[in-house]
Image 1 (cartoon, one colour):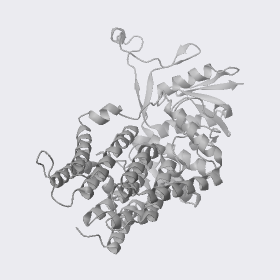
Image 2: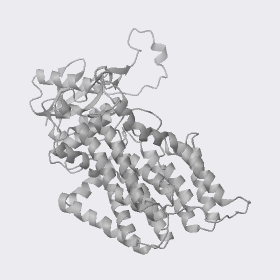
Image 3: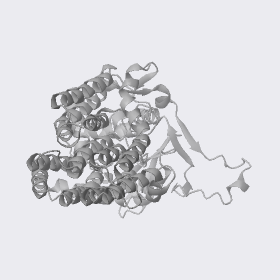
Image 4: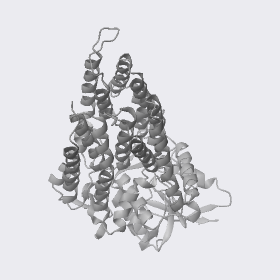
Length: 541
């Protein structure tokens, strides 16, 4: 295959951004269908950054500043939060476009360059997180962005240039992409930086490795100048705290199931098969590089909610780009070139549902009927352009135990292995877990706090995994608090009250928080208000 036409390739990439990004924007906002808790987590961080706060320094999060800075930029410029999210996605795609174009014209012949570019652009502008679930969701947008940057850096490191080496350009792009990964979600950096370094070493491209280090160090210096050395220390502390979390030790399947369960074994087998075939072609560098990437691919998939192996199409493209130019046979008599082509086709087939879903998500948003949606913040104004269905905002459902006293289920409770859910003043808290209606539930609690005179700019520590209450009324966010609870008592020192939900989103988080509070020396809490939805505790220090 011949090299792609540089002008046509650039126009193709621009057209994807314009069409998919434009379709999403033309709807007049972002209309999510689920994952409202994740979305409110995003809104909290963006609004905090607009207050001048820095992630890690001013609030706890394991996610990097770059995961939210593009969105915060557009809200700072006056856009509503829904449009800001969509504009930020287009901005990320546009920022990556020159690097994606360079990968295409320097690494991939013919249609492979267009396919690679399309995959990366889709990762940037999709409004679905992946898998085959066809619902609009901005949840885990940072995972898609991180995959996009990873694809670019991995392709430049693993695939040799089609003509002469250009280590300055390659190295700078790789370094900037790795720096972006560190500032979006450090899991990707930890997983892929070593494999990328090994791939460059296998190719003996020491100059590109040097320029990558220079570019990455430059980003570190710039961030340090703006945020200070303490930013990196606080970032590391947040990551350590999250790694110790008992509330959410993993977001999905165990790592053994991500490798060997029926849904993932095919992907693992194809990755190993392709690497082995390439090594048998006497091209050790590419084979070793593919094997070095596999642990990172698996670990990132394990770390991401949904465990969607979005690395599969990149692997298939690498198979095709690295296959032998001439027919070669291994010791078993297999045609290695055809074997890698078959492995690539199988890998593409496994990846297709997720990428078709992501690519079609802006089209689905543009064509569906938005009747029955309302602002996620449940108020009109500039930020009313982020909307979700009425049923998800206002229908408040939960899981409860039916084995209450007198229900006749006492015998069934024996050996039921029901976890201890905590207690207050010696009284056990009810078994209840909120499953639907988080915005309406939160808004109702905040309205009640305001009517009872407990709001008025106070800071309230929520004994739950989510703490979006300050978005819904006259409350302030906790100083050094955590928009998503992972462990400890972040922000407790600034709290005026503790609010204990009667039906939390995470009973486990509620129990851990209450246990930690009760273990504090010199601190006592006293109940001052009880409603069917919450118990409010005053803090005495």
